[in-house]
Amino acid sequence: MRMSRYFLPVLKENPAEAQIVSHRYMLRAGMIKQSSAGIYSWLPMGFKVLRRLEQIVHEEQIRAGHIPMLMPTLQSADLWRESGRYDDYGQEMLRIKDRHDRDMLYGPTNEELITDIFRSHVGSYKDLPLTLYHVQWKFRDEVRPRFGVMRGREFYMKDGYNFDLTKEDALHAYNRHLVSYLRTYERMGLQAIPMRADGGPIGGDYTHEFLVLAETGESEVFYDSEITDLKFGDREIDYDSVSECQAVLEEFTSRYARTDETHDEALFEQIPEARRRSARGIEVGQIFYFGTKYSEPMGAVVANEKGERVPVHMGSHGIGVSRLVGAIIEASHDDKGIIWPEGVTPFHCGIVNLKQGDEEADAACETIYKSLTALGLEPLYDDRNERAGGKFASMDLIGLPWRITVGPRGLKNGVVELTSRRTGESEELPPEQAIERIAKIYAGL
Ligand code: ATP
Ligand code: MG
Image (cartoon, rainbow, N blue to C red; front, top):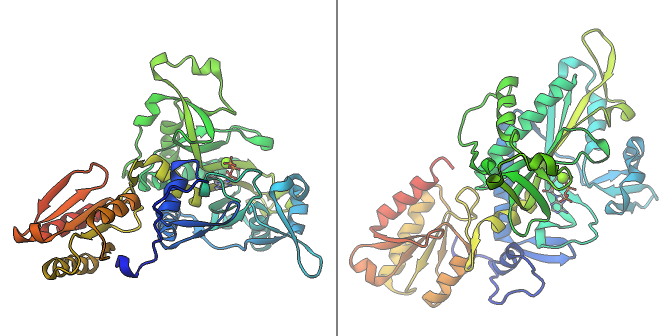
């Protein structure tokens, strides 16, 4: 993309309404624009990151054997009356009447809708196990929308639902989700720690929240510092294997890690003092096993091997895709701007032309731009007639992980400059080598 033709409305001033760094940088880097409280338009660069995160989510869900689909945002109140949640949900639910005076709502989540789909089409244990998911906009009329996309009213969420014959099978689905989430967040350049969370009105031990440690997080968390050494990495895992998924779950959940809702001070104090940590965290996902809570009242039953009709065991599993855009920035920035992890960056590399209009510099930039594009990469070429200082400031704010700087002086010696946004280190090298390096960095990402 050429900056002169792109839509990237960068702001010079710090927007007064932004209290935290991710909100500030998302506004300044022209990623979002508020349309009303807690509701945002995603401008082109913000949209690119959102799409990229969604793509990673899809790839990892499909790898785990889960099946993508799409449910609507607007739902009929009738289904929610069946489960009893129409009255329970409270003011967070946006209730709407259509022209025939029928009660509708903008979905805050989809347990009812998916259970209805399931009961209409599945009747036998032979069709199980089944996990369906979608990535769709949700609406929750939060009392205090704030921090930009981190606590919006309209937000983008991946929500998945497993259907299993037995509790044991459903717990395998739970473990499988935990594993796939670990991989998902790591690919986004994040460490998200599974923490034992509160089962809410449903109760039980079977829920974990995934938290990204950050000072601005809304949750208070307590954990054993050893947990931050754990990496999932690129290990191969057979998602159908009960024992393999179980082993990963045990590895990642056996150390103390809890949100304040489940925190147990006596247990916490059994950890050696030097390893005890209390911190703030951002909830970027949650997994849940809730048994027959919806299948029973809504009649989602299947015939088991003996021909008996039994309600299915279910769980739901969510990832806050739009919140993650903010969470990644909270975890990865400096005082100049965002520092995108390579796995999620909106453009792979920036090209800064120090002297627009100089024949050689322009030609060299064109060649680099075209070579990177031919390799399947997306460079962002700052071809505007602006001073170098302004171009650097914009690039630093936008936070692309790599920058190639091209100027007449370097070109006389046959070199350009390759700079890492994260370390600030620069290296002079011939343009072809800079291109090769960039290609290598992104190979396999
Ligand atoms: P919270 O405790 O932050 O209100 P929740 O536990 O009610 O969230 P879930 O129902 O678990 O949310 O939804 C799954 C994920 O969706 C959350 O882990 C979070 O990442 C994201 N999410 C929830 N509410 C919002 C919101 N208002 N704005 C943006 N993302 C949200
Ligand atoms: Mg939650």
